[in-house]
Amino acid sequence: MIDNLKKILNEDQDPKAIEKITAKLESLLMKNEEVGYIGVQKKPAITVFPDSIVMTNKRIIICKPKNLGLSMDFIDYDWDDIAGAFVKENILGSEFSFSTKTELVISIDYIPKNQARKLHTFAKEQMDLIKNPAVIAPIIEEVATQEEIHVADTIPYEEEAVEEFETEEVTNFAEIMPAIPTYFEPISEPVSTTTNTTAEKKLADLSQDELFEKLQNYKKLLDNGLIMQGEYDNYKKEILSYM
Image (cartoon, rainbow, N blue to C red; front, side, top):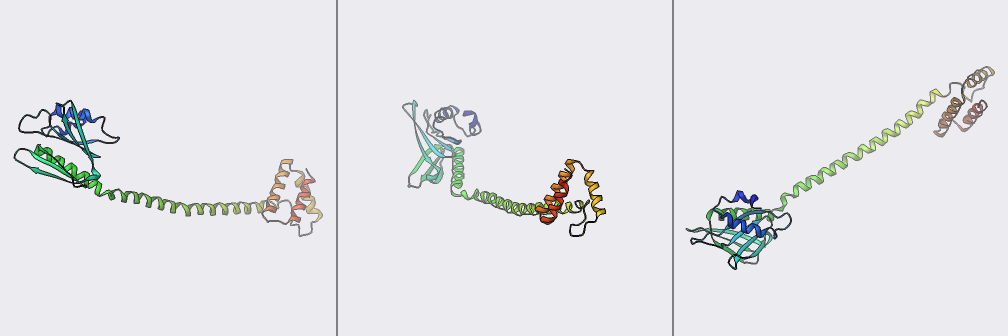
C-alpha cells in the first residue's frame, strides 16, 4: 500500500510512520475502500509515536498509538456522520478538527500546515459528494429516456414490417393467377370439342410431377377464394384422369 501513497509523502510526513499506519490499515479497509490522504502529527519536540488522521473515500480514521507503539487504537467516523471540517493555523503547525451530527468535535493539533489544508480539502470534497448525490440522477434519467425512445421507435417499425409481409403474400397469390388458366377455357363458357382436345393433348404431354404441381396451384387458388369449388372440382377431375 505504501507504493500507492508516494504522491502524498511530500508534505513532511515521516515515511516510517506512514508505513506503520498503512501496514495496520490493510486489515481494516473495507471492500472498494481507498486511502485518500494521511496527516501525521508533528510536535515541536521529538514525537516517537505521533497521532495520525487517515481519510478514505468512506470514512475518517483516527489512529492513536499506545503501549510504546506496540498497539494502536482506531476510531472511525463515516462521512454520513460528519457535519463539518475546520482548520486553525497556529505558529507551530495547525489544528485540524471535524464535528459530527451528534455535536461531537474531534481535533488533532500540531498537524503541519500543508497536511492540514489537504485534509480539509479532502474532507470538503467527500462531504459534497454526500450532500449532492443528484449528480448521478440526470445520467440515470437520460439512459431511461433513451431506452423509452428506442422502444417507441421499434414498435411502429415492427408494425410496418408486418404490413409489408402481408402485402407481399397477397401479391404472390395474385401473380399465380395469370399463369394458371393456360390449358383451360373458363368453366362458365361451353367447352368445345376442339378446345377440349387441345387441352387433353397438352395435359397428356405433362409428367406426373408437373400434373401434381398444377393440381396444387389450383388448390391454392381455391383456398384463397380465387376460384369456386365447382371449378376446382372440374380441374381436379380433369388432371387426375391423366395421372
